[in-house]
Length: 344
Ligand code: SF4
Image (tube, rainbow, N blue to C red; front, side):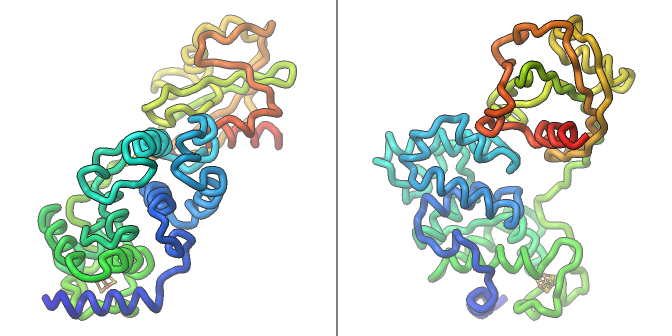
């Protein structure tokens, strides 16, 4: 393989074809760090409004460090994988305290920060600091697997390292990601428009749909997740999910996964944490569909009236004024449920 020629083709194609995205117009390591963190497992079009809002609210590491965790989560709500927001906040604290507010420029310090894995460290070092590190996201992984017929993670890493070991490593990494995202598509690669088709093993052997090395797709799970909206005197009773887990730190309407043998109402009684005995009426409002990572959720929504307004069952529950919901990080499922009730 002529690596030099391959690199030239990639860089030339990238110069002419890359999408004009806000994080490509900056060399600010902080802004690049935020973008690369948001882009993990998330599409560009989804990230764009979140990126703008986040940087408007927290334009510097110091601003992010000073912000309350609740405010950070509120701006992240809907983007998914909430551990990323918690880790950004924790990493900002470490950077301010241990690195004088500057993102470290070396691998060992970067990789020691909460939430920074080899992809983020490689992207930051190459894009923001011009250092010869690879950054292999899902798009690059698929592209390199096809071009080099890479059989495993080790082979892939070796190829990515070799490609980045030259001038302009940041642009090269971005060229690989961009080509993977826009031309070397998962199900329908546009080989006819590909600038490196003559280098590509999959194209030459007519096997472009080969599975990326090291990727094992998790099967999806279908889940029934009934939930209730309990409102009283302009307030709604919500509970906060434990931080660190799935949707950690987000506020949600009470409810939860239904067991196979249960009815939706029985499942709700189990999840209502003792509140069930105060229920006066439970009226079905409708049903919504929602996906969280590998879970495909069907949620039946009920409006619940209590016999009398009761104290929250424990400190993770709270009556929240409807007018202040905007300031709380709500789960997307709960937002959808509130919309459904408002429209019904
Ligand atoms: S030739 Fe086809 S399969 Fe090969 S890298 Fe280009 S788009 Fe992907």
